[in-house]
Image 1 (spheres, rainbow, N blue to C red):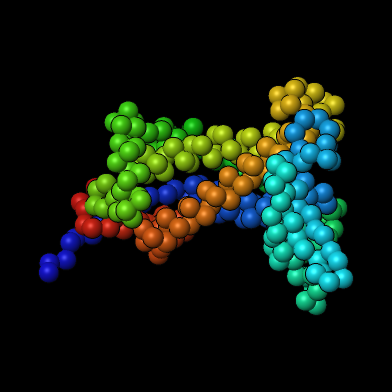
Image 2: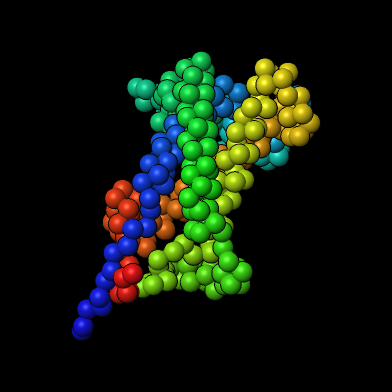
Length: 274
């Protein structure tokens, strides 16, 4: 079998690579510190005030001498036993503790709301600064228009691209030079919708920001609604990261990782170099 020629291209600029890894660290710390904050009151509501008797989501626990502590997750009034992960989980010394999310998912691992808030706020502002730098670079360099905005022709191939991904058939050769339409739409949704929404709902939960900008409460329908949206957006970002990492591994882990570290990407399946 004759080997196909390969070509290396410069796929990511240094600005994209640096902001990508800063974002990755920020999102990880924000998730873990955010779960620490959530554990202080592991329930979600809609509106301005907490309707304790009618939560949208609640991570609770029940206990008895016979059965021990049981973690219970309630979603719209429907209860599920989730002992070991949600509501009640094993803590230091192997003892079962009443916690919304387990200690290995929070920063710090022990229950400490004030420390969790300090971690969360520091990395939230770092994420904002980093995201602003990325957006300004993308506009100034043409990265947004050139690499992220899908063409009309690409938009017409969404169905085909979805089918190819479900069959784990990824672009090869010259087709792998650029992001496909699913990547472009997903990255745009994360950068221009989910992350700004995360920041705005986070600000809405601050009484000081509400006093300065009361329009935020009107926009999101109350502080508790903003908290619920904040949680849902965070869940959406976690889903994005899981799928993103899975695609990186399935389509060529080392090649993709190298391109985001050094910028160099080897076109799979043979291609012509520019």
